[in-house]
Length: 286
Image (tube, rainbow, N blue to C red; front, side, top):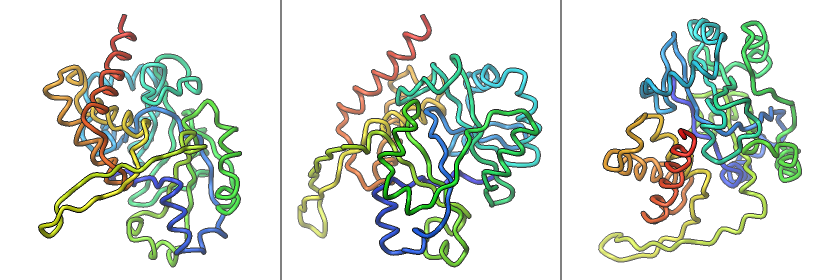
């Protein structure tokens, strides 16, 4: 069982392309980025993105989302590691609910055999065979996407954005240390990146006995809300217990900030978004 790889931001990927220009000449796949939770299924057992067992209440939500197709997905997981987005009106951390059907819904977006991702064409074929919902895709060139990604985003208004999937040859993959264990490079393009004006947050820290200023961009809201949702997937109903939830949320947000080389938000901002998340959950229960 493999953990789903980190997904690069546009800025991170542009920096990689400057060093590894061969990526620009490759064909790739664009898939809509549904707003929900990344869930992994292996041999009938459900896990969070961090490979922790999925809480019972979320397993019930999976059953509601899949309905009569629950057994088909479990059957598929006996042959492949299944990655799917669990979403719907009740589980869209960034607020993009229009792409979903009903309170709980799902979309399969990846299948893995051993340590290798299947190409989207194969995933689509298997989803049709098992009558499961698939995210869909279209084939593009990497260069085309980087030149016109802001225009492409206009076609994905109901979604959080889109994901670019590249399957480079091994000679290129070896030049990307983080992706040596995977056969795909993933990049996310979000609506928040368009026209984004991101200031620089200055933090002070001690380095070799001296106090130095560290300048980093702020972490965007959807990443913070996504981190809170990851904590929710691990805690289940305990997300309402501040003593249990807040320390885990702070850790998840810090992980996201470190991953994208952003400044960790102030505690007051994280708590404000946590309360926004909790209030939304409470309103849906009424």
